[in-house]
Image 1 (cartoon, rainbow, N blue to C red):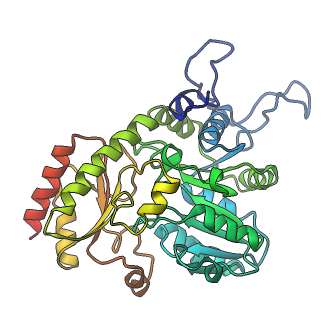
Image 2 (cartoon, rainbow, N blue to C red):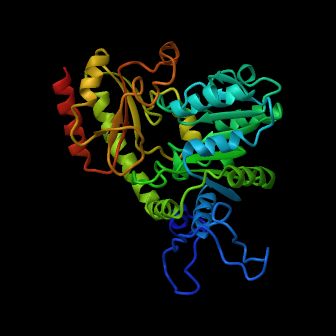
Length: 380
């Protein structure tokens, strides 16, 4: 079972032995009966083990070419789980373009507990960006919201040279289009809330690894802290995974059409999309990705007021945070997902007040383009 289109449906799952149920059952229980004190079937308490959750972990691990998966109650909990395995005083180099919630967690939570964070452009000089003594390199590729592409192999080579681990947030690309462990990463993180579930009805996260030692550390944190997803959330994510391959294909085809339309529009001053030949990340994206999916960012001509009016004027695109669902969403990073990043830092990164981020769904693409056009007209 080597092809990913087959794995999303079958990997890590089997028919129920007792009933023959085709779908993975939902084990809605908090505890398990034991025939003798301290002797059990492998399940004693649901924070520690749940068969539904384990099926999800096995499935996503197979998709990412990992040996192990550790599921958490959210993408932010998965991020925290990784950091909680690090030693006191750990030095983390993070990509300078990150999800605002990750930036907030690093700077407002873990920095207060003795961890040191350095934010660097990992598309530039890696020797300068990743110094000796680094414990962990953390980055997204493509990034949120500027869709910058980092050379994962190159970062992993530099990290290995200084004895650092590498964690890649692969939420935007998904394992359909990119598998960082195959490129040398030690850890892969997903917000399963997004594309993996794909229906905007679940919050979850997961960490994948090939390392037994890293897995044991993550599993200890998962059980000790208890930030685990419930069985219904894991079951819904498993169900969503079954259509991941066909959904990503449609997300991508719709995005390409919309990007072509944006390229010809005189109300757009800049487009961020790695599969454009003019994009700075195009060459690396072609080398390490097999496609890209439905994330597009662009800068709308005008000021913040114009951008806000545009975002509030769409009818099919819903103004909302999050991404990766079958429905199309849009948001304004400066005042929404990246509001926790200081204004001067946003400006230095290139997160303009007029930057609009689209999560392009699987609706009819002509309807989506018409919706964007009418919002352009209203907001002039």
